[in-house]
Length: 534
Figure 1 (cartoon, rainbow, N blue to C red):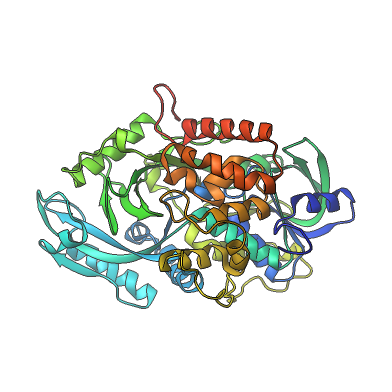
Figure 2 (cartoon, rainbow, N blue to C red):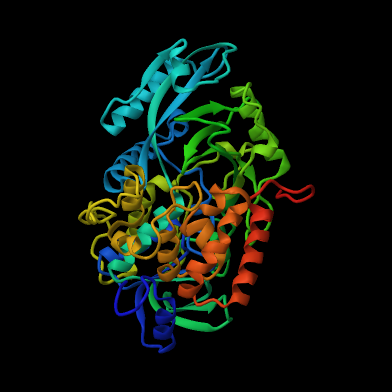
């Protein structure tokens, strides 16, 4: 831990300092997703005094409910977004080098069926450009039945081959958390469940950000030179106070999760849905198989957890049935679901999938807002934001940096015999220099049949500002997505291990347990009849 008996993220200690009224920050970031975390990381590394506030939990929104892909985006290249794809491919390569075990390579296979676009020649040409951007050739055409060696059980009707290529996958929430840890190590402060209420300005410059503690209603003022609004789908909320017009088009992407034994894949199967032609992926992640995603306008309130609709379930099951016709996979096989809302800078495209995915930045008199963009390019987005903020940051001369996003700590001793090589790599990627603390926090056995260790849950409960049980089970770890009924089978032992470090009474635990299981039923399982999002 950092300091004597202090957790890594000492929420109450930071709030106590703010109550004293003496704290001044060069920069306050509003929003605890990947964009906000990246901005905080770059600001802290540059020596700025920086604070991040998040109205819910870190990575609560889009950044824990993405499609987990760290990729350049072949479809963006195909639609002419050369610069976006180039930047994303290069950042993908950078993340693979800097954060192995957190960002890992994953083979993709695109099956080719007769009378289906694109054919192998056109697709191979796109991949040649893609590989050129990455600086290495990493694709091949799989003629005839060779594609079945990669994707057994694939529909053979009209199949005449496939193309293998490479991209990467991550635990998106853990990527946010690792980035926040790097920022805190450089002196930044982070607060979850703290809402930005109002910006106070004088003479065209920011003077103070008024915030409220969501958990108890307390209000505080934070002195700052610059406020960055990195709230994703909520961008318009803060900007509207400053007279800006609405710019964000919220788009929902939903996913189904299956046990790996029920829908086994060793690579990502990349497809175009027959109904609308948009890309859908079937891929292995954290020991399960994920199918996604949809791309629909989201009109439900952003303050509620997004949830999959029955129509989206049918849409995703249809592609599974088409690609793996002998699998017999149906609704009863679904382990969990998730739905995230993408903050796309709105245009007028009738088809949501045609909207531009590049990020946009606005300067509203010392409040810099950013929205859009890709998870993969979060470092570049952060540097663009700080560049726009230079007129308000006297301490910062330049915002660009080629320094690593993640530190490379020395190996934490020998791998414990009970931990597999795969788990060891994963732990090093997820926790970085904090791993030695994790290894002594609790039992090193796995939670049920996941790769998650009990020690991870205990360490996170003690160090990562857990305010609600879903913080721990849906974002700090992904147990709630990987086990049936949100991991209900593990809750009794979790109570015994974690309530002492959380300082929760038996009564508080029961309330948290009930609320978590109801949240899981409402937003992370198959929708009940009449329960959906539009």
